[in-house]
Length: 271
Image (cartoon, rainbow, N blue to C red; front, side):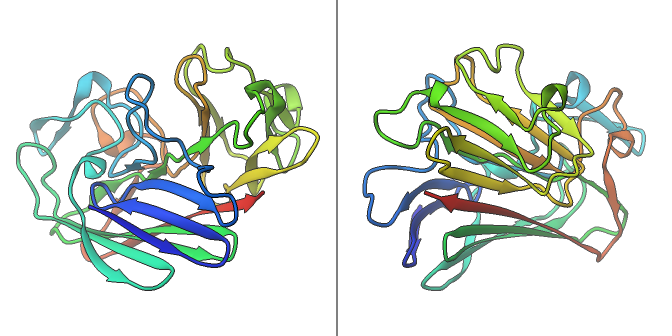
C-alpha cells in the first residue's frame, strides 16, 4: 500500500513494501517528480533499503556456524518484504519489520524501523535495527535512492553534474560531468570521503538534490546503463568483499544481542 504525507515544501509517497520511497514532488510544481519513477525496462526499483548487507555476496551464499546459506543476489532482503505502518503523522511515516529468524536465509531475529520525515525542504530517512537474537548479527546498511536527473523539464542529462563538497571526485575534481556513458562500467565507489555531502547539480542554475554523506565510510554513484533519467548517490556503512564470511566484509558491524544500530539519510531539495 502507498501512503502520502506532505508539508509546505514537499509531497512524499512511500510504499509499505520495503518501506520504499515511491515519489516526491516540490510543492508548486505538480507532476515534476524529484525521484526516479521505476520504469521496469531500466530499473524497476526506486529507493530500496539495503539491509542487512550491501552489494553482492560472492556466489550468492555465506557460511555461519558451519552451515551454508543461499541468499538473494544483492542488497539484502528487507527491500522485498511488506513492512507494517507503525506510526503516521502529518509529515512523517514510520514502518516496522519484524524478522523472526529463518534457517534457510537469515538465522538472526531482528526488528527494523524506518522513519521517513519531511523537515522543511529536507527528507530525513532513519533506519533503526535491533538484534533480537542471542548471538552477534553481521550488519551493513545502505541507502539507494534514485534521484531524478534531469529534474527540470527541457533540460538534458549533459546539463547536470555530480558535485562533491570537497574536491574528492575523479582526479581530485569537485564535479563529475554527466553523460549517457558515465556508468558504462557500473557503479563507482568512493571510500573514506571527507565531504559531508554530494549533490546532483544543474549547471548554470545551481539547483540541486543533495545527499548527506557524513558518517558513511562508503559512497557509491550509480545509474542503469545509458543513465535513463536518474542517478543514485548511495551512502553505505559497509561494502562487498571476497569470501563467504559476512563479518569479514568491509565495514560490517557485529551487532550484539539486544543492541541497536541506526543511520540517517538526509536528502535536501535545493530547487
